[in-house]
Amino acid sequence: MNDFSIGKNVRAHYNSGIYIGEVLEDRGDKYLIKVLAVIKHPMQGDLHHPGKVEGVFFHERKALAHYEKMNVAKPVVYSFEGAIPNYNDSLKKAVMKLKEKLTNKDTEFNQLALKRVEELEERYYHQSYY
Image 1 (cartoon, rainbow, N blue to C red):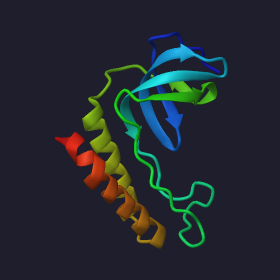
Image 2 (image 1 turned 180 degrees about the horizontal axis):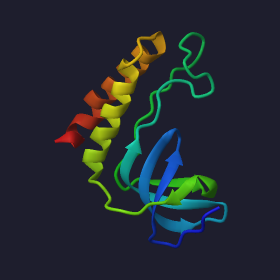
Image 3 (image 1 turned 45 degrees about the vertical axis):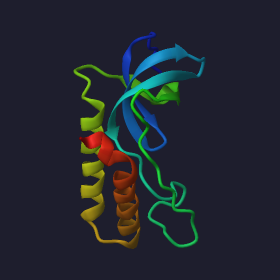
């Protein structure tokens, strides 16, 4: 397990998304991290039943907001070196990547997940893109 000091920039997995952030606090088995950029947008749907649309609650997951704080288990926090991308640009890129992945294979799950992502874009993200 990596040990990071306060103020260190890190890459962290959180609720099926991956973010770049700054360590604000060491909370024993977790770090409190401030979100600075999005690497991977969270997946849509039921994470316990991936690929399923029938008989499951199909979750809609937004990416964490710029400067939002997250409590992340230490084992899924990694060092990040390099320039931190602009949050809005990183969000747009992560959404585009997810949409591309979902359109590569025509399944009922991918269609519903794509619809959810497009709804997120319309309701929340378009204002961040510009």
